[in-house]
Image (cartoon, rainbow, N blue to C red; front, side):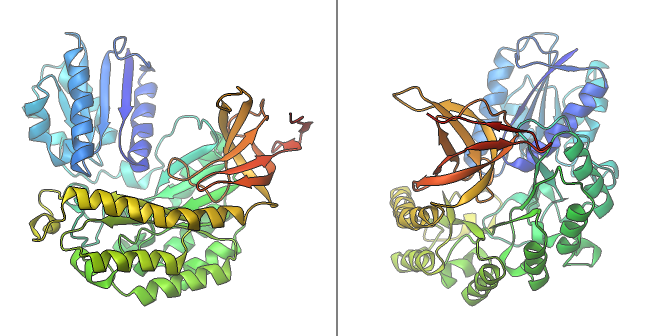
Length: 464
């Protein structure tokens, strides 16, 4: 039996897909990149935004159109949880729904479908469940390719953000036990991980559901202290601004494995907009966090994300966001145009911002950030940075080999790269030191004289 798995959406979905894959492999299913050759088709969907929903529906419809009589098509994950009835209506070829926190039931679902159950009878899998296996045990993971792996430390969210649908289909925060996460971290290191990227809806809320709201520093210390030196980097994503404690900053500064990098999505920089968003609106608190982070870790890279065009956002409020960007000088900035999601308080707010205004403000925000990002990158020129190699490419035009890697300043998939023109033959997943000799708005350019693997073997690399 063969399976074909498509994962859409965020890294948290990737972790769940890894669990699905390992359960299928343990049950003697083999992976295939060809949907035509598969016996089981699974789409781990995203339902966060309307655009993501339509993408998920489109992938399911495409697979449904080409589905053979004896193939099984499963819609899993967030969209199956949020809009299961709509999925079945728009994609009648779907045989089963597998909601969030239910990835561990995939084999039972397949067995039931083969036993002749109907779609409707399998809506029981489209529930927010809290099976112990999902939280008390380490998630089974396949071998790590490329040296980097995501690790989900909690699921669900308690934040009241007016624009967000996640609590509607993910439920309240549920943190995974520390021991299970340490076991999973060691398993990932044994599977080849040199970098662990910790993700959650709000990573800094870890442990609050146990009545221990500042448990993240203890988890980070445990992972660093109880993994061996094959693990080089631990990266923290999605920190809620009100939960960045002094203890967390101290912990990040004191462990060499914890990279000096923090992703703290702030969503806006104007107090009035933040209040309508139901987000922390004390701008002074953000300045205080940033000052403490930079004092404790002078080389820290700070990333954030903003939403433009939130209902009621005036030109004055948007200018407040631009001023905030100028004042903080973030290393990395991402942005989204506001999307009204059904069922959220923000969808009912008056004074919608026209799409053309959203587009114009998005462009202005990114234009404002570009020279800041460039200056931050130019400050790296002349330094030696360790990079995690992700692969190779070619220099456009000349065909010269081009090494692609990431430094501690770059999270996978969302940030820039370190480019090594003329360098080749270094396998993905290796870590090497490069001398930075060039900078662009989002990427760095470097050269390497020596390749050093973790087993301390060295090989000279000649650069053209």
